[in-house]
Amino acid sequence: MELLFPGRCLLCGDELTFNSREGEPLCLACRAGLIPLDSPRRCAVCSLPLSSEKRLCTRCRRREYEFQCNLSLFEYLGDIRELLYQYKFRNRLRLSRILAGFYAQALRAGFPGAVLIPAPANPQAVRRRGWDPVERLCRVLRRDHGFPVRRALERRAGPAQKLLGYEERRLNLRGTIGLRRGTPGELVLIDDVFTTGATASECARLLLLGGASRVRVLTLAIDVP
Ligand SMILES: [Zn+2]
Ligand SMILES: [Zn+2]
Image (tube, rainbow, N blue to C red; front, top):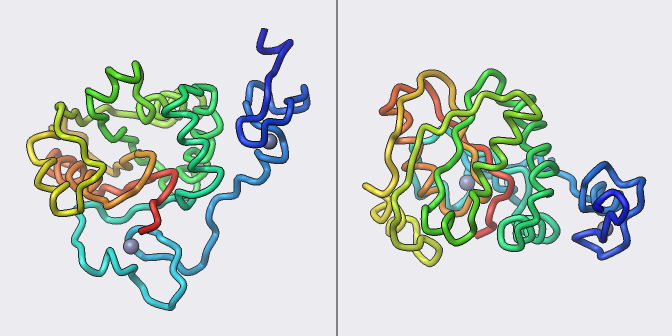
């Protein structure tokens, strides 16, 4: 049925034609408008685009993270924010292929040979939603792009993180995230949005304890503080 009635573009609402890439719920114009950040001036740690010549953003100047650096492919605004919303909260699972494609491109360019570690989801959120958005992206990255994926971390139910600041989040996370199995070598933690970095930092701390030689973070979007 989907082939006969391809539906409408999730961003502009235009009717999709058969020219749209197979199975993608976006029109060609909206698809072409999704261009990852290519700013020469970005924070050396979290990759936030900067307007000044400074090496670090104000957030990273105040903080020590356990991961080496984060790379975000977009700012968490506009179309990408809308697509993540459609994917995670409206269950538009077909977006996983488009979104995974952005990660795949970045992984090939900047993280050769690294093992992908999905950031563990809050089990309450998974139960509510019935699936795990980051885990699904990692599954597509393994199946369609051949990247090695290891579910090295797990998370127990804990209080929601959304409204907490960095330090509160860090304290909140201790004991909530656990190491399922140590994984040696170069690791890339995969998550959807980089917000305060607290979750990624706790994940990296555990992965380093588990024998990783280096942990970097790759996220689709960075929340602009
Ligand atoms: Zn469109
Ligand atoms: Zn930064």
